[in-house]
Image (tube, rainbow, N blue to C red):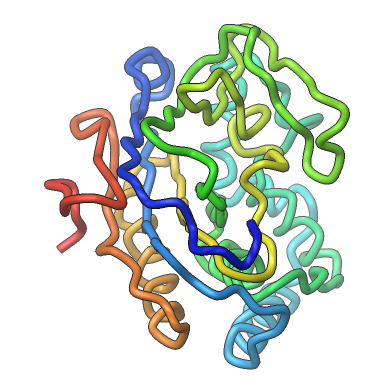
Length: 256
């Protein structure tokens, strides 16, 4: 995104029925942020991320302990149910948890990416910031056909095609914006500095995961209150409420 105003227009986000059949417990929390200035460093966010890292360091979890956390173990099972090896392709939350559990700290990227990492470490679920300024109409979490085009993060000149049946975030233009569900984000939706039209996602697949997703959404919303932004109320999608329109009229799926 450049410094121009982000693109306006409604975006319908949908969980595909075929995915819900494979992983019936999938819950997707969303916060639409129509216009926000993303900065390189925000002291409050930095403090949140450091506190989340310190808390995890104090637990002294090994690699096996991270994999056994209820939310992470459920993601490993969900990946297997869609024919992905979680040992080779761990979900986004497992990747950051493993790294910090070893005693490391995460690289500081920018205010929104750092915020998502802080919340992910706290609720132990995948949390992502997606710049959807180039996406209008529809965005579906669905099984790939294999013809979609994915531009790898940091390497947009080396396009890939997801494998048929792979879970992706796909738009109506035949573009995939993730690989293997949330293992990797695409270059088109990366959150950069400057003004962005953002979609924040929090995902779970474990029993009782909706409550954890809602907790993550509240943490994100509380932090966004300190930014120069006016996010929409959070919404939660699942098998019973698989679709919502964002960046438009309020949705019936709004979290109360």
